[in-house]
Image 1: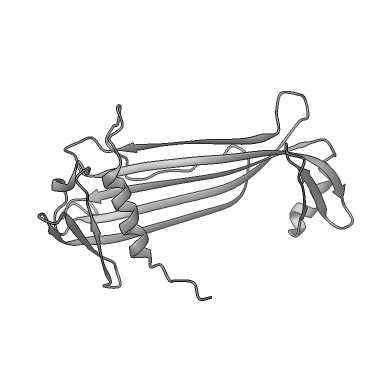
Image 2: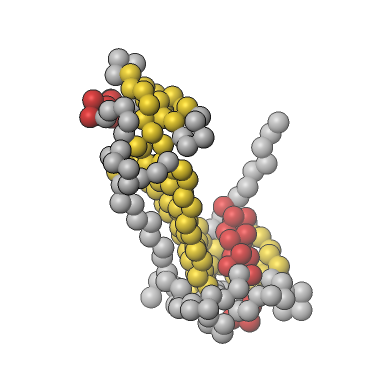
Length: 209
């Protein structure tokens, strides 16, 4: 089966629609122009991507916004009646979405202070009513498992979750293979995935200033 192609502009249009529709946070401040992912454990990977588009036209009666990407492709989204800042968007405005994600791993001592399980955290802040539309959102997922087997010859580790399910992971990176001898059965392994998204709308004439 052929997977449908989703263009970057479609993703940006969908993200802007979410930013417009989200309710205003009770203590929301002006949304920052970037969102930063921070990890405190040993970082394994990081990804960053920025998408930009220009507001081409707005149909106030039908509440439609048409965006044009760098390649010239256009995408139209609908701003429902729940949108608070629709009137602040003008043709020529620049819309940008900055996405960051990071994956980190940390070895924890089996000292009784850490528990197996999954922890999810996150939150969203939107721009105050009457200001330029925008949004920052982020969340993190942390899974803590126990190292129950270690095979230095074959470069594999076995992790067991709180449900008793085992997963064998092969370490292929030579640098990390050399570090396996630092591990010991009984260690707790905490793996964290963090991502953040910032949507901003820059009025025409202010972009780049």
